[in-house]
Image (cartoon, rainbow, N blue to C red):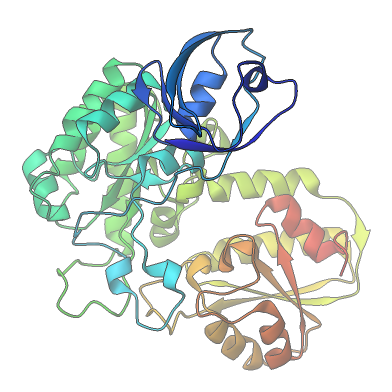
Length: 429
C-alpha cells in the first residue's frame, strides 16, 4: 500500500480524482508493495489502479495514457525499508567487525530492490516466490547476485543456510525470463576455489548473455576472526594460479566473462588486464577494473602545469606500487611538484586488510604524523569516507584529522582525472 502525500496539478492522478490521504492498493490487481510498483506502471500506457479513498471506498480505475504522461503522485513513504541477510556466511565481513563503530556498519543488507536500484550484491536467500514473480513482472534488471558457488550443497555449507541452494534455481529462472545479472564469487581459499570455481564458472556461463559477468573477489579478513572458520590468506603464488585459471576459462569461453578483482594482480605483483578487457566496467564497484580505468583517465588528463606543493598521498599497502607509479607520472608533468606516497598498514583491522578504502582515520593520522619528510597537503580518495560524508570508518571526521595532523586534506573523487587535478593544483586547494 502506498499512501498519497500530494497530487500534482494537471496530472492524470488529479484527473481521475485522487487526493491526499488516498491509498494505492494495487496495480493491475498486483499488490502495491513499494515505489517500484508505481514507477513501473507509471511508465506504461494501460493499467488498472486500485485505490482506497479516505472515506473507505475501494475502486478500480482503468488508466489509458501516453507512455510519457505521468500520474503525478508523491507518497508518504517509498516502503523501501532495507531487508537484511538471513545467512551466516563463513566469510562474512560484518562478523569480523570490532565493537564501537558506526551502527550502519553492522547492518547486513540483502535487498533485491537495492540490487536493482543501487547495484548492491544480494544472495537471494531471503526472497519469496511472490518476490521472484515480482522481479520478473517488473523487469527488475540488472541485478547483482552473490553466487559464491553453483554447487548447491557447498553453497548451503558456506552460507550456513539450509535453503541457500534455492538461489541457483532463481538465477536460472531469472535468466530464462530475460533478467540480466552480474554475479560474483567471493572466493574463500580451500573452499570454493579450484575445481569448484571452474564448475561455477561453466554453470553460470551456460546462462550467458543473461548472466553477463562473473567477478571473482578475495575474502576480506580482519584480525577479529576468533572462533570463525579458518580461511587461508592469499599469497603471490596462489594469486598467480587464480589469474592463470581465469585466463584459461575465459579463453575457453571466447569472451572475458570472468573478471578478477584488481587485488589478485596486486598480490601477484603483475599488471592488471588492459582497459579493453573490462568492457563497460559492470563490476567497477566491486573493485574490478578500477586500476585500468584509473590509469586511462589519468593519462588522458595529463597536461603541463606548475604547482610548487609537496603532497603526501596515503594508500593501503596493496595499491602502493601502482599509486606510487602514477604519482611519478604526474610529477613529470607538473613543474615544482613533489609527491610522497605512503603505504599505510591497517592496524585497526589487521595487516591482512590492505585496501585503501578500509583505512581508518586513526591509522591515517598515525601514519601522517610519523612521516619524516616535510609536506604541505594530505591527499586521500573519497573511498576512505562514508558515502556523501566526511566521516572515516572509525567515526573520525576530515576536520578532526586536519586538527590532529596540522595539515589541510584534499579529498580526490577517486578517478584518474581527479587524481591529477588534486596533485596539479587544478582542483581548488
